Amino acid sequence: MPTTNAYTYTRVLMGSPIFLKLFVDNPPLVEEVYARIGELEDQLTVNRAHSEVMDINHAAGKHPVSVSPALFQLIKRATEVSLLAGSCFNLTIGPLVKRWKIGFQGHTVPPQEAIDALLPLTDPHQLVLDASNHSVFLPHAGMEIDLGAIAKGYIADVIKNLLYQRGVYHAIINLGGNVQTLGRPQNGPNQQWAVGLQKPFGDNGELIGIIHVVNKSVVTSGIYERYFVADDKLYHHILHPRTGYPLDNELFSVTIISDASIDGDIYTTLLYGMGVEKGREYLQAYPHIEAIFVTRDNKVIFSSDKQFTFTLLDNSYQLAG
Ligand code: AMP
Ligand code: MG
Image (tube, rainbow, N blue to C red):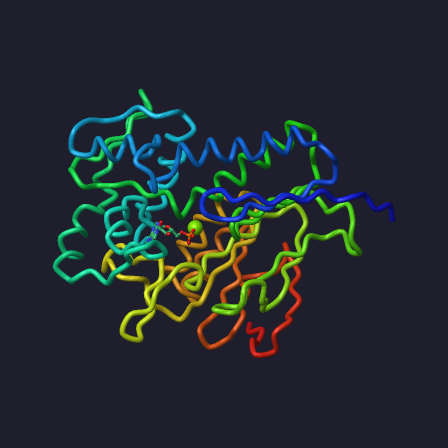
């Protein structure tokens, strides 16, 4: 089997290391990839005073803001998922995310009154979208869109398309745990990509096992990614839209294997909220999307496994049907 040289790069953007592996030596393309990620971060971030999304947030309670067609589509998709019956995905969760500051300096457990006061500002039904001029309107002052649960998946797909346009069909990009793969790797023994499944609260790089895929996205949402501990209680970064507190269930993490990374990013958050039983049931209608649930009692549960193979490395975890 012919083996090609691999070219690997890591740069920190969006607060995470962004890893890229290609099998062609093309420095201008590498620059183009990272520059594009930087542009998308500038457009989507809510962790700075200015971005296209922050323009919408700053105009809350005042006026609609027309945004680029791509951002409008992204917000439309996130809104649709937020409005699904019983959905725990909510793109207008911003005020609560900002109040908790989980994963940032100054994190606190807000008093119940503060949460009660913010919950009405996180109703996605209130969002007004107008396709005729791509405008987005948050009708009450204090409302905020947060695309943190969807942005990396979206960016991973944009980069995949960019690489295709430049004639690159074999590559992997890892945006802080949000992995998109193109084709097969051009080196290595088995011509499949090996994506690690993190051990919850383990050391960085400590794995439960390895997910082998070809031409798939692999996205994980885990409570160990961003959290803090106060009074012996763990508070993690995925909030329940109806209580305003971190979602409390049997899961450590959800991983989604899919074609589009945006689906992976949406479904990890959505299915984390559903838990194992409902999540598996839900996915029966979406055979092209597969999930790996890791539970707090150390079980690794697959919704199905047609699009990947899994190698268990840590025997304190059990594969469960
Ligand atoms: P992810 O890393 O995809 O699991 O997304 C987590 C991020 O999404 C958080 O850091 C928040 O910015 C945001 N977020 C938290 N809770 C929710 C929620 N219930 N729905 C949508 N986004 C959320
Ligand atoms: Mg997500």
